[in-house]
Length: 387
Image 1 (cartoon, rainbow, N blue to C red):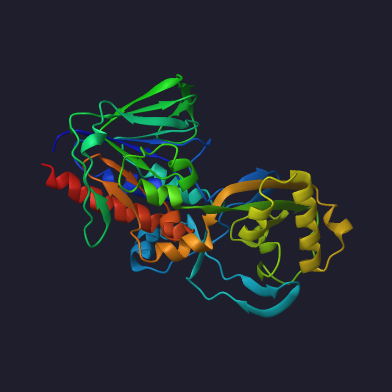
Image 2 (cartoon, helix red, strand yellow):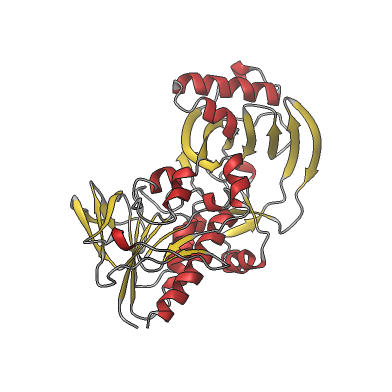
């Protein structure tokens, strides 16, 4: 096989899955670019010692056999654990049902949710490099012949073909970055501004609102990216010296500004310091995505007080209070419905550019894996066919 240099934009679950699948191919060099300080994507964790908050995906479900097979090594290594949480379903402010999750269905990483992404990253071989703190600002294929674009779609995937000169490469550029080794976390040197290198293939796993700024508009699947929209979410994080008087680990909430209240300290292998992660509904977040952040925090505290039936003054006594705004958190209802009849990934095998991410299905850890895995399958076949 001719040597192939592959760039993957984003080191969340989708990007890491693609790298994990491609790394065993001969003569492949893979570079992941991640704008954040660490790998994780939606499996993010914030620490405010002694409190820990999984302020992205607080837990996940494994539905498919393929995803279960993927996570089995993490379960065996103790990186993942099932969570038989006590659950309350809440409508507005009223509890409508209470039960316990069954074994081996809901999972968390331990001792933090970002350990899942770290585990995948540490399994990557020497032909994979991860560059953290590196924002890709532009991708450009030199002398790209956009006049001769043509495309076709097979029955299983949205795979387009365009008549390009395969000798050309994609050039990636950035405005800033730090180069970090494969072992995760040790800065080697400040990244130079500008050129990030040339690559034969580029895989983008950014949300559509960011991908649309990178992907050339001449590609046939560009309209799907352009028309896709994700909704935001706020994560309110409260740490207390003493536990609150509530009788659940997870509250699943509807008809409220909130969607989840999770007692993070009740998860396996967490610090004892009592910690609540409170997630807004996507609809409420979208309505207030650019509102004053102190006002947002105040409103979420009021909604939390109403659901927990605890005086606002008591919540204000939190020894730690923080908030994070996820601008692109989940697929919008309209996008989720549209995606039901669409491919879980996008790939142009002639332009040698692909797109993956849970937003192409529905926002979840498993769907990030599904999208990345499906794209990797198609790319492996395309590389084999090109020989």
